[in-house]
Image (cartoon, rainbow, N blue to C red):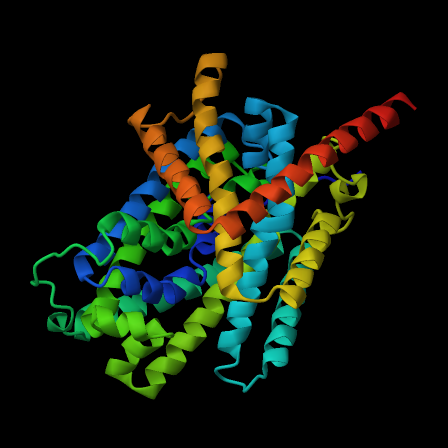
Amino acid sequence: MAQLKRALTGFDLTMIAIGSTIGSGIFLTPSSIASVLPEPTWILCVWVIGGLTAIAGALTFAELGSMMPQTGGVYVYLKHAYGGLVGFLFGWAYFLVVSTGCIAALSIAFATYFGYFIQLSPTGIIVAAMAGLTLVTVLNVLGVRVGGIFSDVFTVLKLAGLVGLITIGIGWGSSTRSHFALPVLEPEGGFGSALALAMVGVLWSYGGWQHATFAAGEAKDPKRAVPVAIIFGAGAVAVIYVLTNIAYMFLLTPSEIAASSRVAADAVSRILGPVGGSMIAAAIFISTFGTTGIYTLTAPRIYYAMAHDGLFFRSVAAVHLRFHAPAVAIVCQSGWALVLILFWGTFENLISYVVFTDWVFFALTAASVFVFRRRNPHIDRSYTIPGYPWTPLFFIAVSLWFVVNTLIAKPEQAWAGLGFLALGVPVYFYWRSRNRNISRS
């Protein structure tokens, strides 16, 4: 029987952590953030808060990864901490909402920017999104090594693009445009309300580093590689995001950022003209297409682990005899993402739906550290959280604040996410009963 191969290096996992985080958010969300926080100080503040939150989460998840370096990552942590139901609901949510929703949104984003070079109708954008997703699906079916190389190449390219943007903004931009010396005033409607609205886009942009844990079972040295990858990945992204926003504000005023639907392109065009807009369109296409490929690589490992536990179709646990990839799991995920592209294709709807559900499980996963510290105090931990218990408590507090705020501010999307979780409860008991009946026969 074919098995998954340990073929991913520490560099591969780090590129997965960075590449799965830097997708479309840093290019698409600054406009909405500047519209509610119209001063540079406030804008930088929320990006720093988001970065600190991501780093705190990575530091927390790193301990879990060093304890349980298995395929499935977060699914494994939740299952062992709270039981099979919570672990299953995580996988259920990722399949129906989180991962497939992200893949659909990213596919639409890269197809939209592909249309910058080749004129595409709305139907053409959908077709291009589906064709691109089909391509990365085939690449990942060819094996984790192929998927890892794809991740490495596209992550390096997207980092190069962002470094170029930062260099242009900070090197040639004019800081007088952003009026950093102006007095800091409270945003219209109050700081609390504006912060809550801005953090939606910020937390969307910072999500993704946890994907490195999903492929832990295929890493050559997972106990060391997983913690290093997610900590370094989250920290590097935080620095890049803050510098990118400084670059934006060296080139555009906050009001110009708020009014722009293509912030990065408009910012670089100030220095390089139309050529700069084309360069940024290419960078966004590379970034979103690369992240789509990484999500297609990592998340199917969750469904593979669930199927091994008897909580999904047994065929999903099958490993391709030649390529040693969970081919059925990959194809199933991409198939559902294609459905989302066809019938639910707006970025705005997908972002709220995806982020809310993801952060529910972020909070639960971080809280599992306390469960394991109490239940298994002597378990082998090659890494422990610095600043425990305050580091995980900070991450949990931000996660819960975001979840509650979304329930209040965007109840339609939030309750839709919770509704999908509720539907998963009877499905879990069905799979568990089915597995028992098969075991007895």
